[in-house]
Length: 78
Image (cartoon, rainbow, N blue to C red; front, side, top):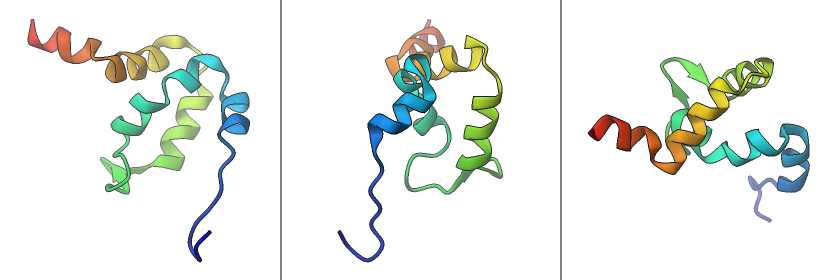
């Protein structure tokens, strides 16, 4: 690995997040600015993930899942 590379064990992250949040990671990633933006509306990824983990309810997780599977885009188009 390069000087600035970092190995992240995806299976360990998935175990910590649990199945529902793990399946919603793509939506979370898109919502919080992907890789080219360091923060969304002044909130960094670490703050966003800590807030997401703090709320065990499915509402936020469902929103990220809808974002990644296109449900949100479909609803906006109708």
